[in-house]
Image 1 (cartoon, helix red, strand yellow):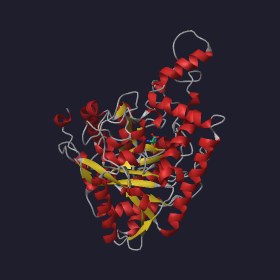
Image 2 (cartoon, helix red, strand yellow):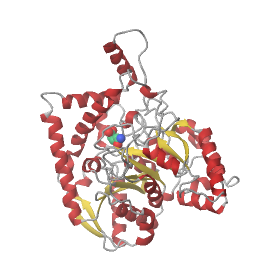
Image 3 (cartoon, protein in one colour):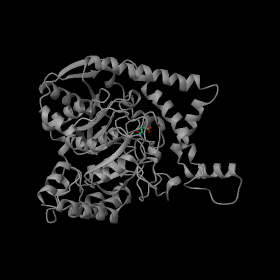
Image 4 (cartoon, helix red, strand yellow):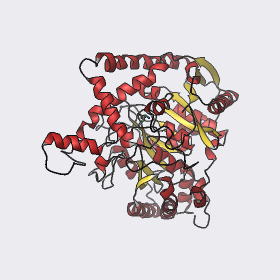
Length: 499
Ligand code: GLN
């Protein structure tokens, strides 16, 4: 690949696999070239919080040896990739974007990290994210913000902003992120890449540092829907270590795309009346509507549908997610592991000082919101009520999926916003999640793919599907990508453009 500096910018996972299989390129070449690119660009983009240079080169050499011996483990063998810094990795620092875990080196791998390592993946490093995955812009990381490769003055979205930006900037062929209320789909939308949130229970969360356990899911960022199928194949399935992962057979996602062809004839696509409200940027609305029209010309049947409880989704999410977070984050008290405030003091003062210094402002806000919603006297009015409304929201989707196979709309109400523009206004930040949180509340899968640009910044199209029907989501996304080229656009990342 050296001598063809553009190649890496165009590379999909499938291309990389073909090049590796044909012997045109080695995993070591690919990995070195990507590490060089990270070295050149990351000072400006802040995508990685840890670069695993030696580990990646060793893994690449091992992959090359396997290939030479005819022992390739999977389609992912030898392909360089990254993991969001909330996914724990044996021997590789994992910080969750928090001062609490600044020096935390996990003694074991999470299931997804392990499955990928066993598939032969080359781990380039850990990507930056909002602290404990709380945020929509990656500005809440203790290590500073990540930047959008399409314009470094803009946010990449969040909380998995580093992962989305890494794939957009070709600093790794694919990345894994997590989606509790949109953190795979929204940054995918803002960075112009494909981002898939699988069904709750499809992928094991063992070794994912918990934010809101009834909502969290791990999912891939890739350039194409086909690439997402490869990654999902490698990570999906039951895991006895995560009791919420389901014993449901994992289909062959890639073969399903090959067999289905590109026609959408007979596919029923629902367009929710509630998805075109206040706050939706006109250019986003136009691009998403143009994409929907195209689905129609590709044979899909378009149906107007209603999801009547949509307007309550954000407030419901912003009670349930902080409530669960306040409980999950109780462990960061400086007693067992992680940061501890220095100095001699009693245990209560030590915990108070540790938590005061260790957590950033947004995490503290969530802990306060969550403990308030769970406290005696308020529990019924907030937490219990939110759970009841969650059931109604999930019911909207159950009803809708009796009529249609897939639901379509925008992923995010606007394109990327400027760094600093919303960081002082939590409510404005939360409004970003209006189209993504319902899928987490309902537990259904969703995917975001690029469908246009406004002011040089990408626009995302979201598809939502039935529980465990990732095949239909990937199929419709793949069909759209077979008839459009939005996903092939690449930001101009010559170093001189980044200053
Ligand atoms: N932006 C949402 C939040 O701040 C979602 C985060 C996520 O999915 N991890 O909670």
